[in-house]
Length: 191
Image (cartoon, rainbow, N blue to C red; front, side, top):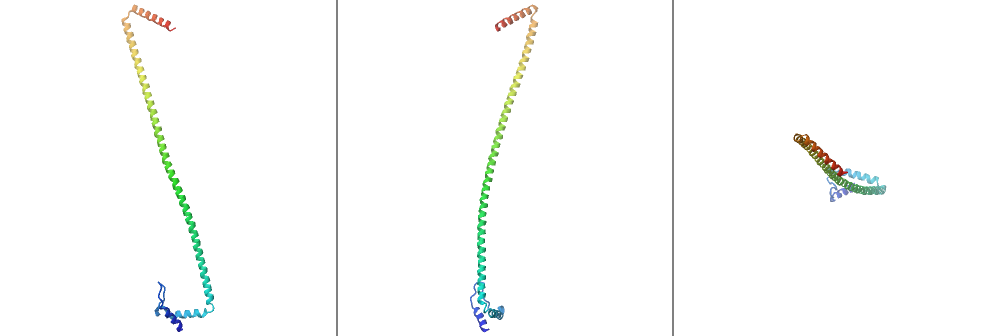
């Protein structure tokens, strides 16, 4: 038993590495309990020590393999995720490009429609201006014709009035005969 406790005391002189080390305080570590537990383990595990080391080695190898497989699977999943992310980014760039084209095309289509509407409005206004001018010309011509007609009618009435007041029956008959003669000569010329 003294050898076991001496081995623990000599272990207490090892330098600690970071947070790992041995506590040499007897009250805090209870070396008697530790030595009893280690003694029991050594006594009952004499024959099985090598088997336990082999099974522990196998267990560690299996655990190492599982960890390596998990890392490999994680790397594969990571690669797949990166590939999917690149595909998604590519699709996003493509969609953004198409959206930009639709936006630009939409703006150009709006501008084209705006210009067409402006041109159509100008043409309509021009046609309305032409119709207005034609209507004004027509109304002016009609007014001029009406004024001419009234002036002509008034002149005729005035001339007839003057003739009626100035002419006596004999002069009147001679004027009528002269006019009939002139109309007859005009008729012969036109025939």
